[in-house]
Length: 432
Image 1 (cartoon, rainbow, N blue to C red):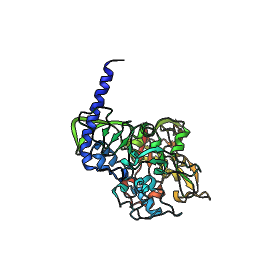
Image 2 (cartoon, helix red, strand yellow; image 1 turned 135 degrees about the horizontal axis):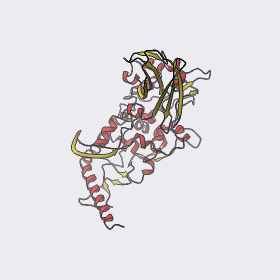
Image 3 (cartoon, rainbow, N blue to C red; image 1 turned 120 degrees about the vertical axis):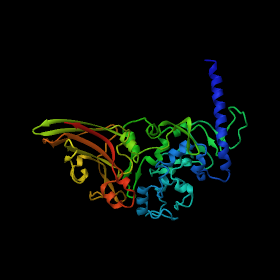
Image 4 (tube, rainbow, N blue to C red; image 1 turned 180 degrees about the vertical axis):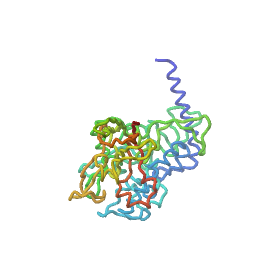
C-alpha cells in the first residue's frame, strides 16, 4: 500500500470534520432540538437551509416542496373535489378513513394525523427535507394481508433522528476544536449513519411512486410494476437526482469561484420540460408512393418505466403535419385531438367503469386500455400524406400533457394556463 494513503485519509477526515462543525455552528444557534420532546418532523426546511443552502434552493422549486394541496394546483383541484378544503381539520374520505392523499402529498400532517394543512409550516412544506431523511427502513408497499401501504406508511419513521446516505453519524454534542475522527461530528439534529442501502436505492422513492389505487380498487399509478417488468437495476436517483456541480451560495448569493457538488434535489419529473424531453426519441422516414408521401415514424421510450408514468391522466400524442416552405400548415393527422381523430397517435392510460365507458380516475373500476410506451419499447406508425406541389416540410412532434382533454376543460381557469399547455417531448422533421 502507498504509505501516503493513510495520512491522506486522516487529513481529509479532519478537514471534513472541521468544516462540517464550523458550518453547523450558526444553524445550531437557530435550532434548539431536544430529542426527548421534539419531533424532527417539525424542523422546517428553512433551518436546513442554513447549512445546505444549495440543496434548499433546488428543493424549494421542486414538486416535492410544492406537493401539498395548498401549493400544487393540479393536486389541489382534485383534492378539493374529492376530499374538501385542505385548511379544514378532520376531513375523511367516503369510507370514513383518513385521506390517503396526504400520506404522499403532505406526509408530516399524515404522521401527526392532521388534515388542516395550514396549521403548521411543516404540513404545507409537502415532501420536505425531514420527510425523507427521517426514514430508517422501508417496510414495502404491502401489508402481510395484501392491503397497500401508501407514502409515509411504507417506512419506519424516526421522530428523534435523521438518516442519510453518507455513512457518517452526527450528534448534538459539540465537536471539540481540533478534533479528529472518530470523534462524532456535531449536527443540530442527530443523524444516524449506515443507511446508504436505503437512500441510494428505489426504496427511498417507492413508498409514494410504487402504486396507487382508487376507492374501487382500480389501479391508477403503477410505476413500480412498470419498472420491474423491464428487469432493470438503474435506481430512480440516477435520472431524478443526478450528481451536479453548482455555485456555492451564501445568503442567496453565489460565491465567486467556489462550487459544491451535490445530488440534485430538484428531482425533475413530468412538470419539467427538460426532463420530459430526455424520455423518448423519434425517427422519421419519408418516401414517395402513388402520388402521396409515405411517412414512417418510430418513437422509442428510453426510460426504465412507462412513458408517461405516474398519474393516470398524463399522456402524450403525436402531431404529424406537412407545411409549405413558408411554414404554413397544409395537412395534419387530427382536427380536435388524436384521442378522437387518430387513436394510434395517442399514448394514454384509459380508465373506465363496468360498462366499458371511459370515466375519471375517482369513478373508474378497471383499466380499459393502456397505450403508453413500455420501458424501452419502440413503436412504428405509418401515414399517407398528400404530396402537393407546395409540400416542403414534414414535421412530427411528440407533445406531453399533464392532463387529458376533458380534465383540462373542467379545470380551465382554476389552475395556471401553463399547466394546460403541452410540453415538447421530441421532434423530427424532413425537408423535401
